[in-house]
Image (cartoon, rainbow, N blue to C red; front, top):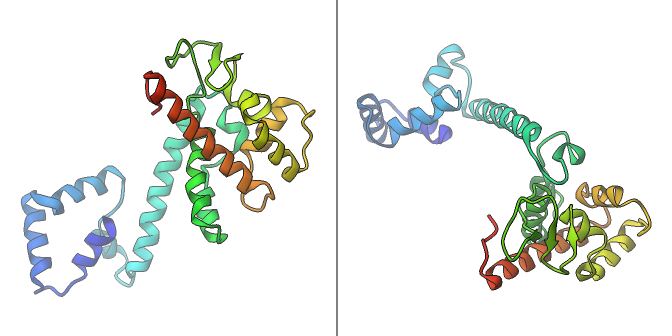
Length: 230
């Protein structure tokens, strides 16, 4: 949005598109005015105002400015959210920074399927997959029943990764590819799974496992007629 405004404002002074944009912006109507409000909310200076301080700046440097402002605002909100979260596996144990996994996969030349599976993996890490419930309904109870094997568990993520019989095949492949032992403490094994990233030999297995986890989770909640996962 910021860059679209900048390109319009960079058109010749007599350009019709620029003139209409400036008129509607000054009158507070349409996309021109609405986008001005959005930039203000995000603390991003408009191209015209930003260029006043440095007339030699170009669109590329303005884009870098916009990206930096968005990154700083998002990081602040992410940090506050991380500190107040009540996840089964606190995100701070996994990473100190927001995940760049999707970009890392893209830069690393991974296939499209890996990027698709990564979405499920990231949703698992942030606690968006409902792997347990009570009586066919989602619950915030301390102990819940695994939707795959029925076992009463306190931490459904750790249970699915470390001992749920439904996921034995995937667990075996993960242990083989990672060189880890099934006898290692469950907390450590769970974190090794959730911290997996680009460059790890077991990454594709981890992503595919997370993808199947989400598919089966969706199937379960739809079939039972209970609350749908978010």
